[in-house]
Length: 260
Image 1: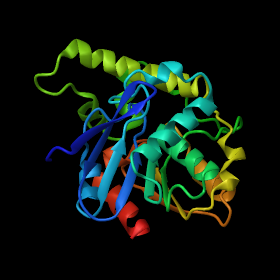
Image 2: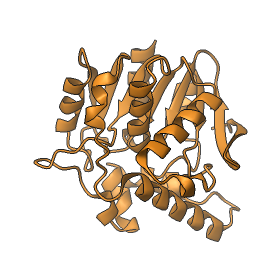
Image 3: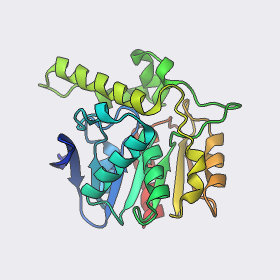
Image 4: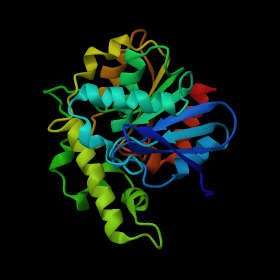
C-alpha cells in the first residue's frame, strides 16, 4: 500500500489529522473502535475507485487530545460535525464504522444536507435492554482481537506499532483512544440514537459482520425499521464487528456498489 496524503485541520487548538488518497468522487470514512492508527486495505480498496478522505476523531490516533474538552454527547456531535465540514466532506458519501458509524448517523440526522449517501457498518448508539450489545469496556486489551474481529490478526495488524516507531508513544496513543471511546460511550454505549435515526433522510446501507460479537445482528433490523423508508442491508460472512478489517474487499465492494 502506498501512503495517503496527510494534512491537518484545527479543532480548538488541537491538530486533527486528515488522510486523503485516490481519485474520483469523494467518499468520507469515520473509523470504528480503536480509530485509524494506520491506513488499511479496506481504504485502499475504496481508493481504487474514489477519493477517500478519512479524518481522525478527537482523541483517537491522529486526533490529538481534543477529546479531553468534550464533556457531553452533544459536544462530540458538534466536534465531529466541525471536522466533517473542515475535511471537505459536505455533499460527499459517508461511511462510518462502529463508533464512527454512530457519529456518522448523528451528522446525517441533524444536518440532512451534509452527507449524500450513508453507509453504516455495525454502528453503535442503539440499546435494547432485552438484547443488549456486548460490553466492550468489560474486555481486557488482550481479548480485543477475537472480540472485535472474526480474524484476530486483522485487529493485531491495525494496532501493531510501525517499524521504527517509539513503542511507549504508541502505547500512549492506544490508551488515549480507549479513553476517548469511554468519554463518548461509557458505560453502556447507549446514546439514544434510536430517537434521532428517524430524522435520517439519506439513502442508507447497513453492513453487518455475520460473526459480530458486539452488536447482535438483530440491530440491523432495528436500524432498518428506524430509518424512514427503510435501509438496504448486507451481511458479510466471516466478518466480525469491524467487518471492514476482516473482509476489506467484500465490504468495499458493497460500499462501492451502493454509492455508485
